Length: 260
Image 1: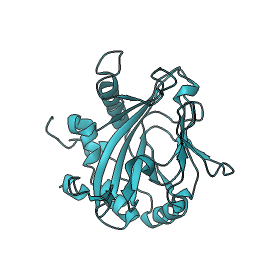
Image 2: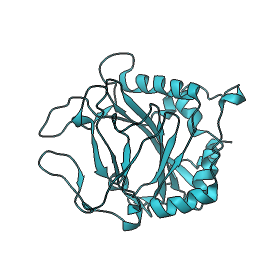
Image 3: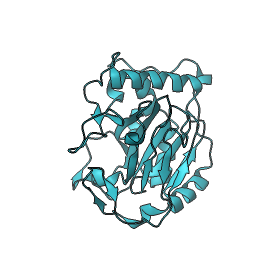
Image 4: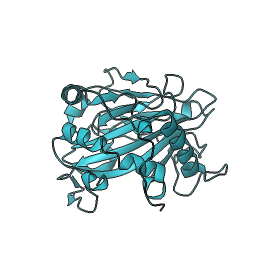
């Protein structure tokens, strides 16, 4: 891995400026908040290039380690919804985001104590894939099994996220419900069986903004109906005393140590 170096140009580093107390109040009520201008234009461009390398490694075929979430037992892959986990250890641009000194205190304020870095990952919706690029309603903790579920996902938009290209939708307040039953119907997609009478709220955001959600907040994203990719980069932080499948998470680094 390339040795990490902080950017030389301090003007190219943003600091989150929203009010922490207001953020916490909204987060506790809705399970999601929005941070604007989290990334500079040059950081957005650099992260887009990092995602292209991570997903395609300079070619047309998906790189090693890329997951195709559009593939099911009933339908073959058409590369409509791609995910890559664990990018930052091999990418200094992503590592720069991991080591940002402004993120950790804001996350600690939301979760009420020291936090660990759980993972980074990216979702990539290629152009022209239509309905198969939809990410259905789900809870992150359905897959991660964190207990207590004191964790947040910071979802950073690398392209303008719109209704047309598949912005994130949330069912606000559902983090208070605990785990919601997920079912797997015949077509293979994971769906949420409950809460069908509640509305999802779209969160369109410009490139460089971030959505921060509790891992039990129900969310999904629409299909990319445009001729351009829709890319995002995410960081997941957990309270330091959280367990995964009943085991302490001591192998995951304390986030404060990563910025020293």
